Image (tube, rainbow, N blue to C red):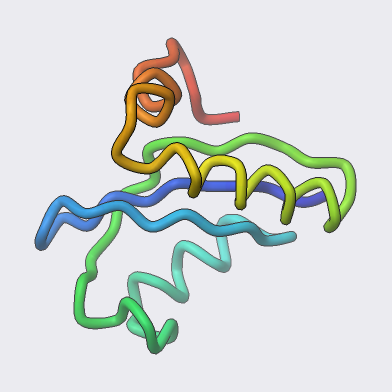
Length: 85
């Protein structure tokens, strides 16, 4: 089982979108600075996640959400009631 997730930086309030097969470990990695591209932006809070049955499904959904970034669809996604699955 995979998961697509959205993190918000507590430092600069920017968002990061990714996918993983272990959300708890991945969030810890981000907050420990183990992700080179965003380690300077931590700490992070999880603001959205959703399950994906396969890696391909997760990659597709990650790209889809990234295409929403900054637009109305992205804002609506983050405003969902109980968005964290």
